[in-house]
Amino acid sequence: MFIFDLLRRSAKAQGDKPAAIFPDARVSFAELDRRSDRVAAALAARGIGPGDRVGILCDNALPALVWFWAILKTGAQTVDMPTLAGRDVLQAVIDEARPKALVIDPKQLAKLGGEGGLELPGLVLTMADGEAVAQGKGMSVVTLEALEAEAETNAETQGSRVPEPAISPDDVAMIVYTSGTTGRPNGVMLSHTNFISNLEASNELMGLGPDDSILMVVPLYYIHGRMQLLMHAMTGGTVVFSAGFTFPAKVHAELVMTNVRGFSGVPYHFNQLLERSKLAAQPPPELRYVLITGGALAPAVLERLRDALPGVGIHLAYGQTEAAPRITWIGPDELFVKVGSVGRALPNVKVEILGSDEQPVGPNVVGEVAAGGPNIMKGYVSGDERQLGKIDSKGRLRTGDLGRVDEDGHLFLVGRSSEMIKSAGERIFPQEIEDVLHRFAGVEEVAVIGLPDEMLGERVVAYIIPKQGVTLDRGELKQHCLAAMPFVRVPKEFVQVDTLPQTASGKVSRSKLKEEVLAALKA
Amino acid sequence: MADIQTKLSTYIRKELSSGETEIEADTSLAGVIDSTAIMELVVWIEGECGFDVEIDDITPDNFGSIKRIVAYIDRNKKK
Image (cartoon, rainbow over all chains, first blue to last red; front, side, top):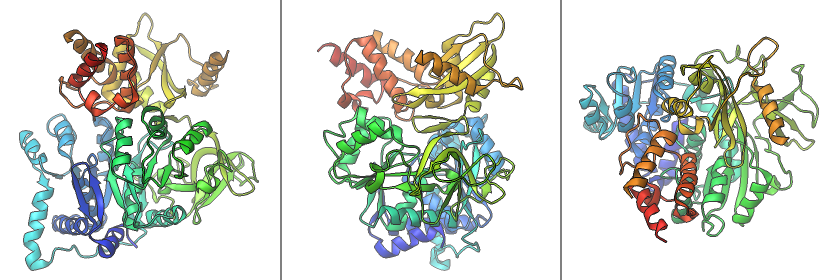
């Protein structure tokens, strides 16, 4: 089974049902299937097919969905690119993944097209206003509308459906770029089988069916965004796209007004909805379940959520992009019994806790969480997943998370072996921010760590040794960071210090620094 | 009123967004600043203007652009 079969089946079984609802548009399964068939045929006619990659650099919108399904139907691989990333990160993704074509929405085209922008592949695809933007920059682009019209004309003689691509379910279908646990953007290659196996297991555990619907607040380039989309394509349920999470009170209003039955978010989203919206005073009337991903919610917050949403089932899933993405799951029956658990392994996933000798340890012994199963990625685009130790000699995914499994098979996470910071649901690697700060004139040495923060989970703090005789200006440092990265990654504090703790080999030790700072905070 | 608009523009330009991003008084802030930045903005307004921002008030209608925030501040300061 291929990922695009999910759409085809739902189009056949319940063609008239809405597949997606946006603030300004909606589309049924049948129409989405038909439109993406046409675009796939037109893309195939332009030489896009198995083995090719097509980048997608778009905010959530209906045309982005048509492109996504069309690319998959040609047998090519999608490359999801983060719209919030800066030019340098995006260029690195293009240079590494070498997409044959790139879908770029008008907003991104205005920002990154033309002189001084991204070096784009030969075929640049866009939609609607994108053509005018491109003309202004002297670029040549092909619009979605033009491809659809082209396929329509050809359909009369040749049929509008692209032939079944010559691929196998084990071939790469989607590449999702993630910060990963290695501190640089990693292109995670996931096959049709990776996703289908994970979707089947997830949907069964959660009991999702065609009557379910969900409010999507995350971008589609996040694996959790793609997962929500595919879960509902599989069941024939509807995805309602939020206008975004900038205003939690608005998201609450959307939950109430759209009558969705489901909502999925990271802990930050739930914190915000509880703190900054009237979720408890006015629970969304049709909400049947919520799903927490991307980390555990603090027990006190979990209780508040339960009290705010009586009768709503709370589910939690733990995973990584490299696991397409879910590894464990826990449902409402056990969440408050096994407090702190992130659940049991999905039925087709094997979780092992490995000790320092790389051997599995017994119940309740802490070690590194490793996972194996049909959902584990094909590899990184860079091809060095084994050298990096993400995939071990037994083919298991090494999560970099520390945890223990109890007698009943419940996984409890106790920490991370990496120095990743989780702030507002974003995975942030100190190295990325340190690299940016090192480019600021006057910075001698820098260490970035995450400190506990009630609302954000962790907040990013930078400790900087200035060059001799230099006094660093906080405002300039902040602007330097804001120009290079999204707000959520920008350090909340810049602390100027004379020294930083070092490791035995003379490198700056973030872990020692964090220990020192936390000890000082407690004192 | 012009005074608070200038202060607010400066604050958003210096603290919440890259100076390279052009933000006019009626530029939509959705997509320019995220929800964590809105939180900081709310704290700034409370400190600067001396009133509490109600949860229900943090909406695109009140916070969607600099112009709207200024109008919102103006309405609440008079209370």
